[in-house]
Image (cartoon, rainbow, N blue to C red; front, top):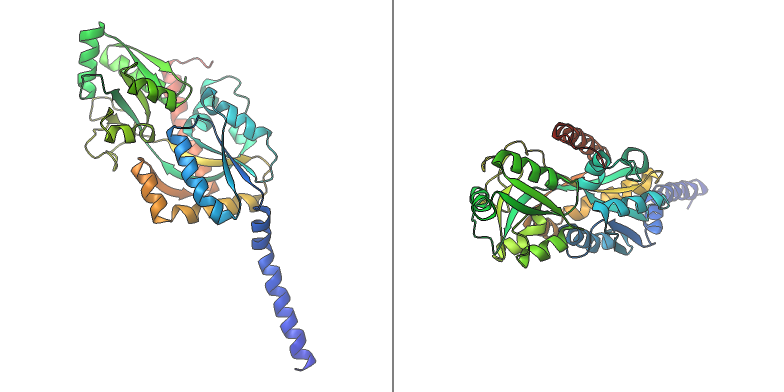
Amino acid sequence: MSPFRRREILQLLGAGATLALPALGARAQGSAPVRLLVGFPPGGGTDAIARLLADKLKDELGAPVIVENKAGAGGQLAAQALKAAAPDGNTLFLSHDHTVSILPLVVKNPGFDPARDFVPVAGFASFANAVALSGGTPAKGLADYFAWVKASGGGKGSVGIPAPASVPEFLVKVMAQKAGLDLQPVPYRGSAPMMQDMLGNQIAAGVGSIPDFIENHRAGKLRIVAVMGAQRQAALPDVPTLAEAGMPGFDELPYYGVFAPAGTPAARVDAFSAAMAKVLAQADLRDRLSAMGLAVGHMPPAQLAARERAYTATWARIIQASGFTPL
């Protein structure tokens, strides 16, 4: 082999090695365990979603993905933990709209500012909140429930919600106003304890996400009677929308996303977002998430950031119009 040819081959090999370094580096950094913070207790819809994703992501990232539940205050504790975490890409936060978009609107000092303290990584689904009735409640639909409250409770009733000052709470308030009832939202520390009381017929109704309710709805242990959104949900084609049930104005659907601490290197953010896109393309995962009532779709960082801003602006107007005073 001529010296010139040998030098040419070595140069090409060197260029190839250089091109491979970013990918190898991302994989090597990913070998450390990834903490996936969840702001709600085990057993709820958000926890179940996080564990499904973690199981798939560990193979794609080449690293353990550990779901860490930091339940309390509607996800506030988990959000504060994310803010305090090192921005090395090894701590992430899986959250729905409540913690990231709603809490900063209803709590004076939540201990975090999403725009300043978080970096959007990847959105992966939208979902609908729903109104559900416990198995011991005789009403079969939303209008039946309102009539039952009037007849049996003198117009007074209690409705479970997974967190105070949340979209479900504002939905309860709007329902009460439109139906002329005294419906009191009863806040829980997440959907799991709310579900326990509903299944035990300790509370007649609840408002939460479809993933919280859908398995028990299918098992006949409770009944979903209305869903948010401009159209019926694919997982529940026989359940009317709130607008169809006489409660218009709740067409904007919440979202799920993953966030990192501010300052996390862009390469780490992009690598995790790409990993999310790959696992979301897997038919078995999409099917399982869709069966839980999610509309699955990958959103890269910029798209998740835009979705968060638009959703926050919509609910800022609704909350302000309600006269709610931040806590």
